[in-house]
Length: 180
Image (cartoon, rainbow, N blue to C red; front, top):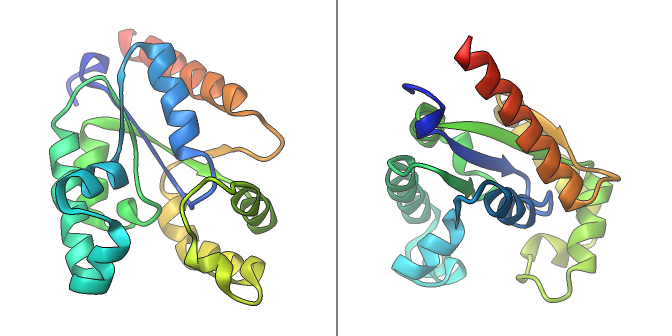
């Protein structure tokens, strides 16, 4: 990256951590464009559940790589990724090359609480099982190393506005250090 003029902000993390909500706020406050990579996939290729059902997970992950490469070429975007997108090294390389990545984090219990409270949100197959908290905890544990490589933003007990302000403050500190 040649400087903050080319910076994108990339938000990753588990579903229910607030990537889309916080991303929209950060984009609004910075005057940048907001992009949700799952929305891009849907716009280009149709519903994600249909892609999984008809083409399989490998095809979906290939589409994620296509979208990651495309949005990485943008400037002044706030990019909310799918929960596993940056666990693929090719996607992580593409998006970290042109942006600063923040991983939004919350406990399994907090994630389940948020997802079950979001009655207007997308259907989450993970919540259909007998013990969603255990399933979320297991997946968080499996993804801990991948998520851990990115700057952590803890979201529990904080409003989306507080989280967005925290990210913007971190960006300002980072920009100031680049000028030195």
